[in-house]
Image (cartoon, rainbow, N blue to C red; front, side, top):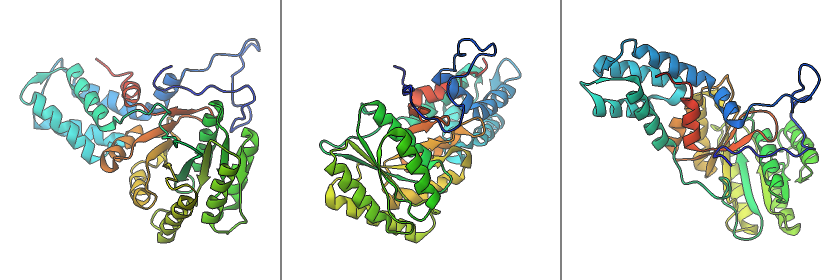
Length: 344
């Protein structure tokens, strides 16, 4: 399978939207083939790719271009427009300056260095378990955090589907007890996916729900326990304290729990995603990121400064609304898709 493996859809898999799934042919005959996952990734990165391809092409209106201060300044401005931020953009600019200053270069030479530097920023050791570190024994506990509206609940459903497709028994914990809609939505997903869910009364202690969910996972010999958390803004101190409490109570049942804490970020949030990562990374002890809503409206370059600044690996990318539209992140294929239509 490819490095951006698409998790296969079961025949009975629900979708997030009515009518989502295999597209009928215009003539009403055999279903029309859907785009491959690499094609979906290219479409998801279209906004970023368009900036790179159009603007970098404009840098090379002549056959060659002298690498001088004007060129480096223009290249830096193009890179910043992809939402990668000034830090990574400066790092790439400085590399180009070191390698090619005072030389006449062609577009393919510059692109090769840009792609290589982005890969270096994004690379992380790949896990044989698809990005998740599984517990040596007993349930693997995954805590999921993120602000309201980031795609957190749907990402939990996608993760549950992923593990179900691998034959794992899953228990969900509806720890976002302050938002009735979040519990209801997660309950609907649990029913559709055929997994057990542990809930509490609205406004009840999220840590208590987390404790009961882990206890239930142990009791039923589940393989994975995924726990939702409240999604208030990361600047609220009480939320950070609540996350620390959840860690403590789960640790009483399973000393190493949670084995993973995944931060769901909305790719369409742009640079605001950086502040979310900053707020959650310390209190929640995040081990990985799920980049949700990566579609044609988002600038995918936001992955780059998050990876550079916080050293939190992007483990999964959500590219669509179906539960199967989740991919294990891989730097090589991400960069290939980012520059798939690069000129030159």
